[in-house]
Image (cartoon, rainbow, N blue to C red):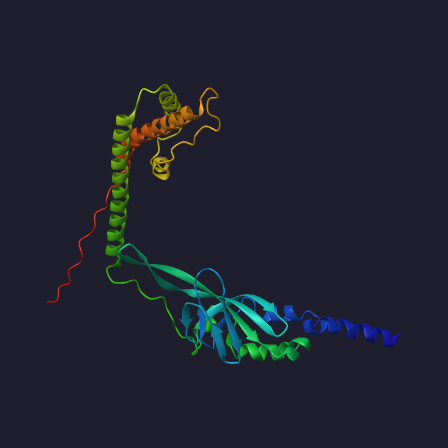
Length: 301
């Protein structure tokens, strides 16, 4: 009886040790998930919304991310994944970076958050033997672990990276860009109005008295009038060359040659209505061009 009781006590004690109980990954996750870390190696990230792979073997890192980060980069562990011979730490960097991009003649900037994945190579024996402490030592050679962000920020190994500042007078650049965008939009609208004028003039001069053509023309007018052409976006999104699709079935009374004249009339009728509506609606779609503040003059005196 005494031996049985001792065996039960020993079994209960063993169940309190995750690694012995088989919850090896859970034991590692409890140590690393949510922890704040400072890297001890160079790391890389594309800063594009997904975790960029960094293959780590000892102090050697292979990463193809667009942006490089010096050792001492602060991050928080979002997820821990155990593989047969490595431990993957999915990290989120709290400090963003400033990314430039081009829009027309303007160089603009946006803040980007960065994610990375450290794939830390491990001796397979550490994993097979479920050696929590051994794995911990290998990972700690790559990243230092801290209880919180403030603790990490007090470490001498923190590289103290901060997001770069926006260029001087960037507010003016944004104002100039907004004015340029408005001018581009208005130019596109003006071009569509000119196109509509030319199209309506061409169609008006080509209307003929052929009955098949006029039958198709009237059908095209009705088809275009059934469209909702009151909104700027609707008109600008439409291709003036394909305003309305041809009816699936043409009038059965039309002979083969008459069908061609009917089709041409249908196309002219629908395009004429679309052109006239474009000339009526598009002028009020012009957007105001915002004022650009004067560039600040620096007094060198």
